[in-house]
Image (cartoon, rainbow, N blue to C red):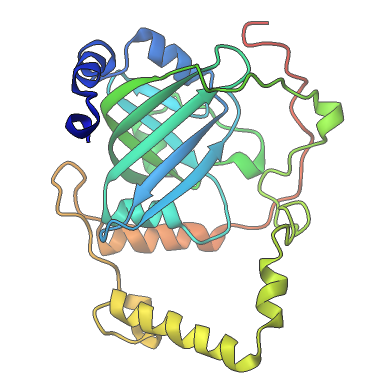
Length: 269
């Protein structure tokens, strides 16, 4: 595409000037103050998923110039991103600072999933978040392969809304309304389908499950695990590890909403 569109020279200059195989000091400082990022993963078939992660400043831990770690909080139980990583270790992050520097940072690399207790055993200085809904169940560790700028020219300049105006964030809640309710009407649309269509959808999902587990039906799936990546950098996800992950998730309980953080007063206030 670079050759077809005549951008090879510009691209080569960008690679040479901006793309690093590590996080330099300014990138590490940038990461350490971010409160959100966008996440891209794909499964073993290359089917993609994009997601969003958020937390207090510093929730993404810079372990060294080539290693990041971010917590996986209690979510909707789908495990789309973690499931993809278990099959395909390639991961892409995009951090965008909309309020201060109006700049972005791409970080691409290989990831692996680590249970919270194992993560803390190796990194005793990790902070313990006092908010129950922000207590990590597991961590994703990313080995950085590429880090480069996302240019500022199309990034909007946004302004933080004071906490008293926006209300408390419902970290870890299972309250349907506080999670957004049926904002897009998907549940209402599903309820309006004739019963035979709902049953057909169930059969289609069951057929997909059988295909994904090598022809083993859903009744036997309790002891079946998807194939792990063969990449030595990630290592295999053992049966024991996945069983431990399931036990962690089973222990997760609904969390009550808590008081919000103090009003934002600037990064260095």
